[in-house]
Image: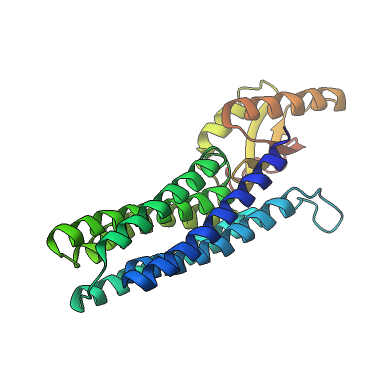
Amino acid sequence: MDHEKVTGKRFFYVTVLNVLITITEFVGGFFSGSLGLISDAFHNLEDSLSIVISYVANVIGKRKNNTKKTFGYKRAETLAAFVNSIVLVIITLVMVFESFRRLSQPQHIDGKLMMIVSLVGLAANFISMMLLLTGSKHNLNIKATFLHMLTDTLSSVGVFVASIFVILFNWNWVDPLITIVIAIWLLKEAYSVVSETINILMEASPKIDLDAVQDAILTVPEIVKVHHVHVWMIDENHIMLDAHINVKKNCNMKELDALYDQVDQLLNDKFNITHVTLQAECSRGLDNSLID
């Protein structure tokens, strides 16, 4: 089955599940008096919107390049990942604020109803998370959405655990305390996605040792120096490189074509660089450094 169709179906299933969870938790939170369920319902509502944004970005990212967008639309997904992660950070901080407020102002909660609703939410969130697990390993956009689902799953676990303490000991303060612990971990995960997307959008070099790239290129006998090297990412799966190379003066055009192919294959095999542009020179630039 076509990967794009599979991704689209999974986004659809996850969206439907999230809408159902949202309705269930709003109703359950209202009748149980659990602010945890109500805040989780708002979180799921935001997640539904995030999933729609991610899916639209996924579709846009598949568009072919044109004269206006010569690199294509791949960064639509990177932008969506950035937006979703920032929203996740904001929601997590709100969760922390709300947790501290609830610690200082505990309220009566129907623990049994809270437990039932949290189990329903946990099951649905876990299914949603599993639907996105495979794609999250190779796509920042899907990873950002996966983190939202992971947030919901952990939040449901927290509400469930809290409901046990509410039922057994009437410890209403356990719910916000667990939420704070989960929030700290989620902020760490969201930070990694935000950091990576910013690096891509700022065209920062990926985690590649430029000296190692230079050494690899210089293994080609006809090349005597490498300078003006630029490495950047279009998205998390496409690394670009352009560089100036000084070659021996007796190289002809046919030999240069073969040399370009050799370097292209070499960099793809060793560093997973997907697109290489080289400018061959004789003596020009010999005094320049690697990144000048």
